[in-house]
Image (cartoon, one colour):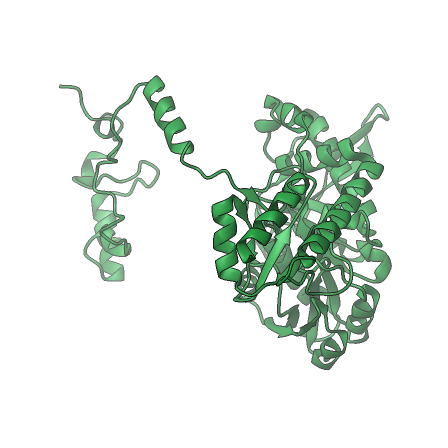
Length: 457
């Protein structure tokens, strides 16, 4: 009789008896019993609270199939997916991904590369990361950019802890807008839970920062002011410099949430007094995955020694040729833990590579053209929807990029009708939907307008 795979590969030491433990935790049975007794439980399973309905019972319940049968089964499952045109945004955007990104980034030397600690074998990747940093230095107007942050939420958390370290006087409040991209606030709150920082919200007005109300919330106990430009509703902030000036008056850092496309048509944040720019840099380089991203983190050179992650720098080798290396690694847990500025310990290099490729493929003019298209198409779609009886769009004034909010009579019902017609929009509440359009979905905009007209008729 052929032994089961789990038996054939079980490397549990004999003294563990019936405990099928991991070979990577080689404790003896006596050692395990001592540890369980010390914490007052009878069995290792008592350490876990797993509902019976999801607990592994020893069987996966997956019938054995040939490769051809598995492929046929997978195609049948995927065929059940609805073919929706997604006019969804709020931090996740669908932009055209040129084929060159997949073709080049999937080369084995990029896929198998980890952190580029050894410059003598990683010059190509290090140069790509250096170019990534250089592009965002130009876009943000700030002197330091890295590519080691998980996503926009963790970038915001890192900005808050940086603010706490560099602020010259005591400050423990982080101010955020009442309406911001979903998820970022909860990540920020988790980040500051182990510090003396606290999070408080200030109001918004007409989709952007209520600067007068922000002024009322500012005091000398504020460590950082955060806002998003464009805001979560797609409106472009009109008083960036005023926000930065208010924060500076109270010796607080100003952090702005942005993305590569919007930065192409906005004044560089560094020129407006912004201290830190965060966001999702993978808006370019990856399709809208509603998950995986790349945390954009840019700041002033004055805070160079306080940034999380790693920085790639240019130098020369012994033959006086241009070369690249990791010039700064502020994560020092592996050397001097007490001097570490962050627990960020991964590397988003491959996604940064894709973003750099996309930016290079577009070039300066192409990036501006893309941003202009997102401005123009948002205005065109909003105007078309506003022409329908019972629809007001956009709800907020000013300029919008990609997305906007529209007022309707019954938003949940309209959302369901649009889903049935093959379109997905954000339903915000009983009377508001949010619509996002990019160059990918612009060709479907007229069909969306027709679907809305039919649904509300």
